Length: 343
Image (cartoon, rainbow, N blue to C red; front, top):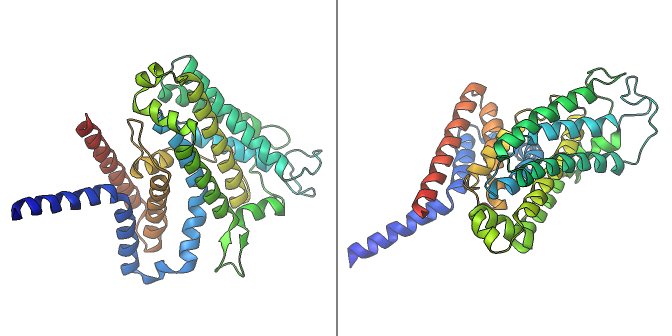
């Protein structure tokens, strides 16, 4: 009887660690860095980490839509780049010496933002059509899109009179979107960009858990053939999901330009890999059908803590890459083990 109880307790402990592994990893990372340098737990540091995580969260949530269907999206970073350039090019100060569009009148802030998001949505829509209607594997379809979008962005960025010069001189109202905050001062405050990321996360959680689109997304990722047989129009919903992902990349591009105060055609480079890694570490299955919004958020925070925390205590960026690589491999191996056990 004692042996049976011990086995049951051991199983419960194992299930607990399996279920909350990523949260434990995040706490251990923060605690380890804080032991080395207690200043890491200051409000300023927490605020900076959240600020840097905000756009990455939105990108990762976009990619989560695609990963849960069993696909992937390598074009996310380049879509972030082109939407950052588009929004920045239309939101420069009227008296800036090197305006991208010298004769463009001052537009309401919302107009260039919506244009940039629409461009992101358009590229996501194209990805969805290629994958759903032409049956091109998502890896190949989005790899091609990644290259094409970067080319289109470079052509746009090289237009006269700009000719590949970094876009600067952004309007104060636009910059305020990325650097402004609610609160009495810069320390005890909540940045607007963090609030936007939280709102996006809540909306995505609702879509994942409370809508037909979310239900069908998990069904497609769990078993696409069963989803088809059950009457789900798989092609249509795949197009919807890729389009939503593209719109989220577009929003992230706008916020990234506002946060950094400018844009170039190289913005967003490799962002998709960080976002995919954050999703995988956060429990989004590479096999499809599994993934949660809280998991994605924690995955992004883990990598943000690694980037910021290890730099904070003076560890070489090269070691950071090794740590990130090990975490990614372990997370994928753990995911594949669970997948094989379920089979």
